[in-house]
Length: 164
Image (cartoon, rainbow, N blue to C red; front, side, top):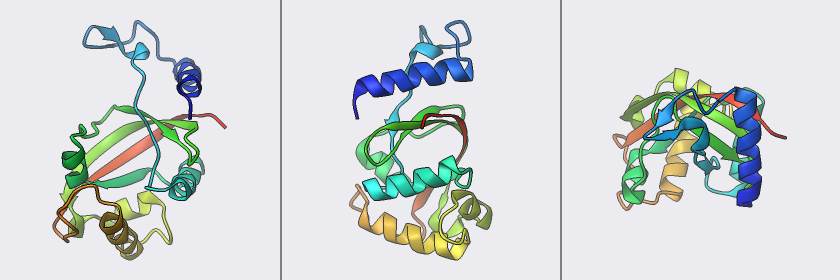
């Protein structure tokens, strides 16, 4: 990944989506000049590519993260309306997404609807729990371990632009 590639993607996406310097502001800077964060789904390049493929196919419209990881990494939580640049496993920008909804619920209270929106495996809650229990155990950046009542940040998003 190079910053030049991300900059070029952002310029293309910004024009495609119709963000202009006059639309809205973040602080005293126009929103269109504030490049969104760039990140990849999953914890490995292979996971990033697999999950991105689901996003690009329109199957994946949701994601989940451990709240404890946000806290351990001192990262701000996502908010509705937030834009993000999604990278592939090689770090190349591929999609601009907008967070549409954010909820924080205990792991054990994630709904069938959200599991389906994540688009993984057979899209059932049972498979979602198996996949995410394993993911939250193996890839946590916090030191609290896994718990059925751990808070999970659930996001729903829309793809605004793709760059293939």
